[in-house]
Length: 249
Image 1 (cartoon, rainbow, N blue to C red):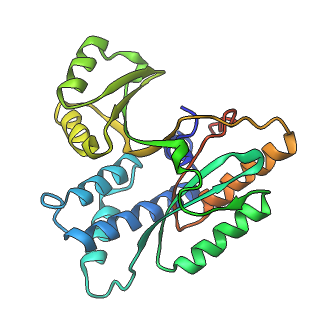
Image 2 (cartoon, rainbow, N blue to C red):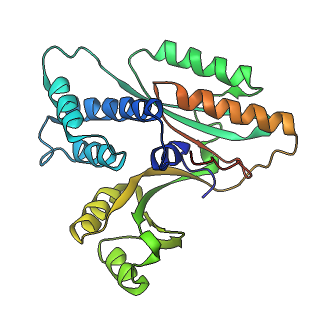
């Protein structure tokens, strides 16, 4: 689905490079750190930590790495304090962009993002300038290798755990929920034995923007690359209609 986080594409790439994996692990480690500091190191009583651990496992982060992240965040020696920030702006041709970040220095992050937008022919805007063009939905992706899962059974199970809608795609089943229900739906599907590749609240665009000019399209691609490569950026959402698909390595 257009406009979904390109980080999802990266983490699902079969031939992801070590550098890409390290970048994803760094981002997930920050989420784990924030969750531990907010609610403690016990995932049984900390729902946000359970979500972060589930995301880490979906990215194939080793259990030892996850345990180290939790212990580090729970220890007195960890001085990192990350703040959740959401930035909005316009890319080339008026493409709407929302950036979710975890930062320990909001001035640095805002400066970096402003530079990226300016460099690529866009501009970083004020809060609310594009978010009205998106709707937040919980999106759970269920693995369906070779499309072997029985459709009627899947539908029954999804609606049984609180899903609002279900879409079948190639070897993946997209389950949509209300944002506040995503944890219940994820845990319910896991309890029923399904394997999930992703589960998070996403910004779904209500309108799409096409880029007719080739140079503008190149600049938009570059903007997304710069944003995704920044350690502070967790997710990037946009309404670019004809975003080119990434090739698997």
